[in-house]
Length: 230
Image 1 (cartoon, one colour):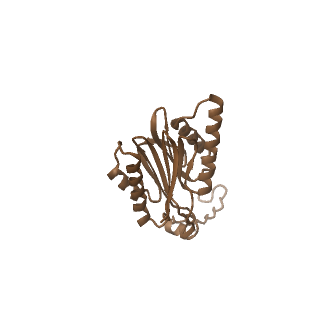
Image 2: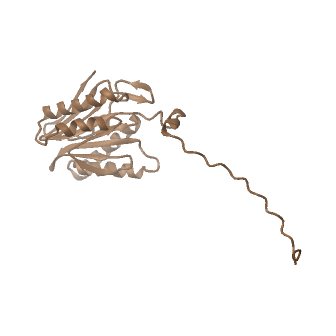
Image 3: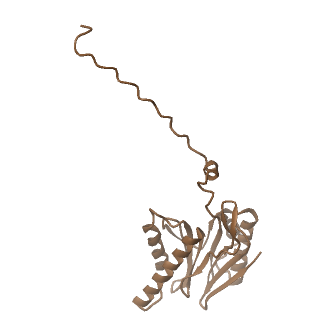
């Protein structure tokens, strides 16, 4: 009975391929995976009469300082601005898209777009680009009939309202200073001093931030732009 029936040929052993080991972020960066990602310190604060947005000026790619005069805050309407951290080209495209859509809204309805609606519009743009995302974290701030307001957005368009915010590589350093000194009844001068102090704190320890600060101060009188160099 041992030899009864057809004999099955022996199935050859399939060679086992070694599974790739995970690389650390440092190893990937050395191979060019993340080395090109730029840093930034960008903040936004709501004060009693309006909103202030600010960002430092340095543009870096890995360990290379590409520019000492990069602009990361943008005026969208006479009462709304955006401040970004990430790829400068993506920031510019996003700000221009938002400005164009806000102007179209104004022409269609005969009234200015609200900060909330503008932020939601930007969130929709970012979410629709989720498969080819715009690499930028964004703070939208402004003044409308509801008063001063601020919204934070991530790469995929998550929309979070807040009284103050920080994004970019210097976030942890900047937000600690803001939280320690923030008061809702601050005036514009106090808010600007707090924002300046927070960004200087980040610059002192974050090598990807530096070279000055651009400000966008939004009040009932309109938008005031200011800049300081270090």
